[in-house]
Length: 176
Image (tube, rainbow, N blue to C red):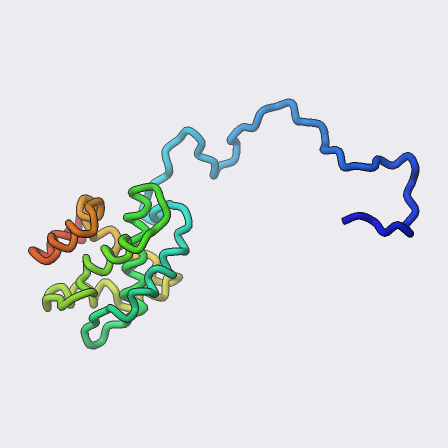
């Protein structure tokens, strides 16, 4: 912002901004968090990295009216679990989450249709209170990790067909 005309200026002061001289050394990744040229770190508490992950929460809210919940289930738990699965799928493709990612998370656990009793019992145990993410972060990670990676990579139409044929096709054993 320019100074008002009534403010006196020194006749020897520069009239325009001049950037500082350029640094001679090139930039180097020296801080511990910079992984330039190295693979992303992996581990139990690191999640799935990807761009614009907060958008998945907005996408999930669009499914709130479509959920078919069993007695005792919470819509917030179902949506947060689906977000965890959707973020895992989006990170597999190296992109931000889209609607299909969240839908696959809901399909995998039977929240968009009539689910068998065995699946309802499984999801009750997994999804209980998971919407409290600060406390239940590892529960959300388990929900995402139980969905088969190959099943997540398929297009949404193929996933719908596979889940109708056998709901267990989307899930892997929690012990592995």
